[in-house]
Image (cartoon, rainbow, N blue to C red; front, side, top):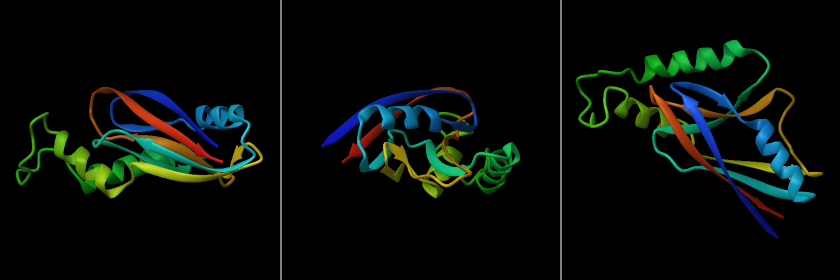
Length: 137
């Protein structure tokens, strides 16, 4: 049995946006006892990560690290069509993931105690991001 659902996540610029709760509610609503959840982001300038959800400094440090790793306004970038955050956004997305796989058991995702699901927005201005959830029972 397959289940799917689309989520829209609105961002307010660069940063990590948690959406574990929304996914957990949907997984529980399907009634699937055991399965595999795939979360897929339909964009190339944002990404998905599973990361610690207890200490907010972790996500701030991650965002700061990626700012240093793929800085804006690097004169070596050729692709700058949509502004100075365009190519760095693609680089950051390439270094992370656009999909996640998470086991589901007992109508719940099997995440670790301190793990949360985040959309990692790499663009500097507000976006509407589309995420597809697919649960295979």
